[in-house]
Length: 458
Ligand SMILES: Cc1cc2nc3c(=O)[nH]c(=O)nc-3n(C[C@H](O)[C@H](O)[C@H](O)COP(=O)(O)OP(=O)(O)OC[C@H]3O[C@@H](n4cnc5c(N)ncnc54)[C@H](O)[C@@H]3O)c2cc1C
Image (cartoon, rainbow, N blue to C red; front, side, top):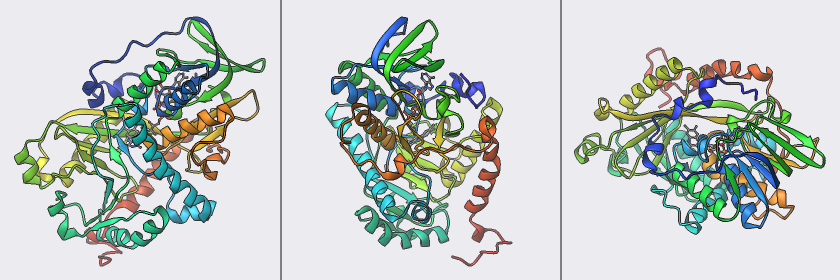
């Protein structure tokens, strides 16, 4: 298996101090693969994409095997920020229209909303208790210019999403329990909610198993090759033959499993810190009591939420390198940003810190569709750090495609566009440093710099 990040990213180290793992008491005992296994459909990857596909396929009566290298929910799905929200592409509205046209943008935005509803319905239908909170999501402006942008976006969002955004002017933030010297106002969209991501993933896995999917853990697929009219998947000590293949490995995929994956996804790290539970007087002192899931207006954004047990979760982009030293440095940056945003909590202990990887596509929209050039195979990936809802949605679409039935939910045109390859092949992550630098410069609030060319924008 040729993976392009440092080995540490695929091992236990990045999640040994994950809050979600500590919050979920029991991991089921999953089967280990042995010998020759035959099935109709093999799903590779046990995150939201693979688990939702397996669940839907099993519920439709299909003979499905899911192979997960570690354990269901081990990848991004069991270690994310738990923001079940709009998103999935990494394009501004203008870029979306320029690249794909207005109709395609509206189609995709409708799917984003639908994806959030899908997760809410699934949690309800399967009675998964995932500690949900937050009424929609709140974006906080990190500069006065960004607040002006949020104000201007209200009619556009209303028209595009068919929902009523709500603005909070700077003077009203404290009254909403969102007091911070960092922010210049906010915009709330009444769509989305926060959840415990690992509880959701494990709930999906248990439901898929109960519906008849054979779920295997400790099952890293080492190689995949056509075999007659189907596929042969080679594992350590086991071999799986299947008529149809579904790839759901997202950022944790390999260049050669199968060969089509090579160069088609960019793994990028994201980091999360979680404080100890904050006392009511500490919340009052900072003036932050809101349970809204929040993120700021930066391109390299921060995402944060006060969880039901009064711990503050604080996430941000990860390091470029995957070694422990690079990760420690980025956690220190996170700690510094956290202290700036929440000065009253600057000395509060961080009980948990972990990282994981998300996938970017070259055209910056998710892909759900066939893997061409061989027996029947499909892939779903690249949600650009927003895969709680969109990965689940993709899994549902994959199940429909495999079964050859009309998709039960809209299948946006942009998600069907063939995935292009990044330049530089397996060295493509070398592009991240200049891109991050460019984004960082764009994210600076220049009005706060004495030498600012843009001071006075406010
Ligand atoms: C720190 C962090 C914070 C995030 N926060 C949010 C958020 O708040 N909201 C949001 O919407 N999204 C968030 N995301 C993104 C979201 O978690 C992902 O988009 C989503 O979980 C992707 O799901 P997936 O099933 O496609 O992939 P994953 O959950 O990554 O699952 C892929 C699985 O494939 C397995 N695998 C890979 N190769 C093989 C192989 N050869 N054989 C067998 N198994 C294999 C891996 O072990 C892994 O478990 C975050 C991600 C991270 C890392």
